[in-house]
Structure formats: structure tokens, C-alpha cells
Length: 186
Image (cartoon, rainbow, N blue to C red; front, side, top):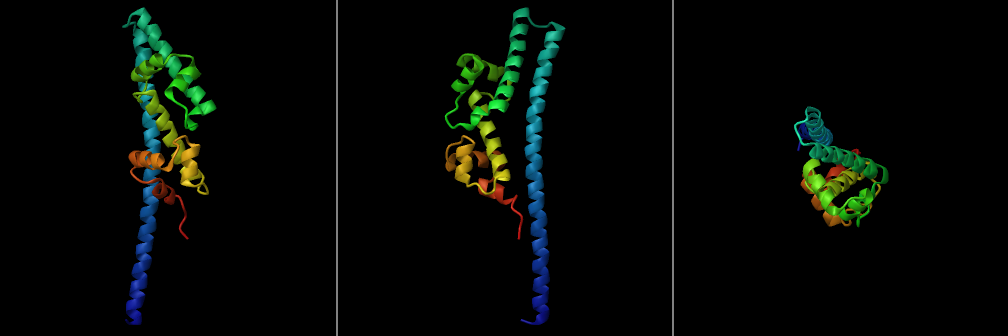
């Protein structure tokens, strides 16, 4: 191989490394953007639902009792968000929808009905699972020194398999692949 060919290969290699770095940065940007969009979409759907309830209440289209129930549901959803944000009980692996109902002082049936009518999460279990996956993604980004097993335990998913399966379902890549996107290349 001549020096000219070696230099050409080196230049091509450098060009490919630059392209790889550009693509990696683009993937990181897109995944972050998708996470932000999904969080905003979730908030937007919830706000639209609550605005619809408020409009129906204001217009008086529903019976008085049903209006009161809907208003109570909106207040209960607000209470769930406040309590979960403040106490973060979902990070305990054994925290269940029954525990959420107890935390709020309502029956399991009332909690299930509330989620069917007031939330994009069709069940309290889906809501708790979503909170755990979001916590895991945050930890994967912010705690690179932690093992994936430690993150699975800390976010309440219990084990690596569950964490891997849930993260794969949500973002289409493994926790290790997701974490690798945030590691600077040397």
C-alpha cells in the first residue's frame, strides 16, 4: 500500500468518524426531543381533558350530581400528582395501585374509575409503571456511575429484565444503548 493510499484511507476514516459523531449527536437530540414531546403531549392531553370538564361544568350541560363528581375527579387527579411528586412512592418496588388508593383515602374501585375517565393512563398500574420508566430514563442519563441493576432497583422496576423490556418498549432501545448516547467519546 502506498503512502498516498494510506493517507486517503486516513482521511476517509476521519470523515467517517465525524459523520458517526454527527449521527450520534442527532440521535441524542431526537431522543431527548421525543421524550420532551411525549411529556408535553401527556400534559396537553390532561389539560385538554380538564378544560373540557370545566367547560361542561360552566355550560351546565350535565346534571348537578355528575358535575360535582367530575369536579371531584379533577381535584383527585391533582392530589395524585401532588402526592406522587412530593413523596415519590412509586420508586418502591412493592408500591401498587392499592397503595395509591390508600395514600389518597379512596377505594380501589374509585381509583380505577378515576383513571378510566380522567387520565391518559387507562389504569393506575399503567400510571405507576410510566412513572417508574421515566425515573429510570432520568437515572440512566444522570447517574452514569450506577449499574443498570441498581437503577432497576432504585426506580421500582425490581430487576434488569423488567427495566430492559420496559425501556425497549418505550424508546426502542436497551438501557445500555440509551445510556451510551450520553457518554462523551474519547
